[in-house]
Image (tube, rainbow, N blue to C red; front, side, top):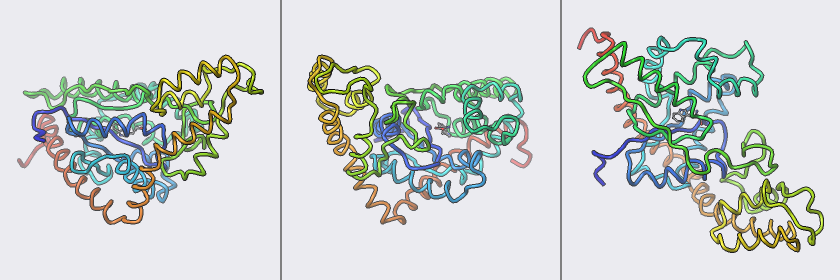
Amino acid sequence: MDKDNVQTILTGDRPTGKLHLGHLVGSLKNRVELQDSHKQFVMIADVQALTDNADNPEKVRSSVFEVAVDNLAAGLNPQKSTLFIQSEITALPELFTYFLNLVTLARLKRNPTVKNEMKEKGFDEDVPAGFLAYPVSQAADILAFKPTLVPVGEDQLPMIEQTNEIVEKFNRLYPSEPPVFNKVKAMVPEHGARLPGIDGKGKASKSLGNAILLSDSNEEIEEKVMKMYTDPEHINVDQPGKVEGNVVFTYLDIFDPNKDQVAQLKEQYQKGGLGDVELKKRLTKVLQDVIEPIREKREYLSKNPDEVMKILEKGTEEAQKVAQKTLEEAKAAMKINYFT
Ligand code: TRP
């Protein structure tokens, strides 16, 4: 398909581990759909991962590979999407440097997602400066590719807001015709980043150990489903059980292709007479069916790392050209293009 006149998308993942079912419904599926109708850039944000993993480069490096494999196994097609590594794009730290002048320290400290993450990680005043400033770096990630749409989870909305503030300020201070940057729109998928963890406590997350990974074996899937949070007051099969907040039903709602049967099961569960184990057996099978083809493709790619690295290299080369062009436009608008 000729993609000259379609909208551009930029999205990305922080490589800090393997991806899980939350990513599959929150972003990967969306990417696979959008790649037919949009120009799509998918960034593996290793520089951002290092902002709070500076002491763990091995983890970041191996996760870059795993995240690439997860994306490809879920159906990202390198012929249709550009998959690339952030740290290789030399224009990004340059743009980041210029953007830092457009943002105040007070504004950085107010970003609710960063605030939240700082609390979770126990940073307080000892936050790495690079971590505090990562929304500005993310604005560079985004704007270098001049996208109109940025698919992200709900927690990323403050980043998009800050990006658009930078667009406004940049265009005001460095006007050009047409303006170098345009505002972007967040695109939050239906299930957002909201897939609950198997413990029902919060969203699924690899670091909390409550997520089902795209690389999990059938046995691991079964084990995790059997541990899943249901209705703690539903002790005997005959008792009526609660559907709301019951993680097994949340997952069935999202992953079970047979919605009518799920509706019937809910009715039966609420009346009494349907046991958790029976339900969990059904969910196990449903999730095994979802993950199996992805896991198989993952295994193939993991055994053929050269193939994966070639895809990344080619995508990175393409991304570098696009970002470099934007950087040159930005520098011209800023009057720091001395020798051109
Ligand atoms: N901050 C994003 C996350 O934690 C990852 C990311 C980095 C990103 N750069 C991006 C997402 C640019 C969208 C656009 O998930």
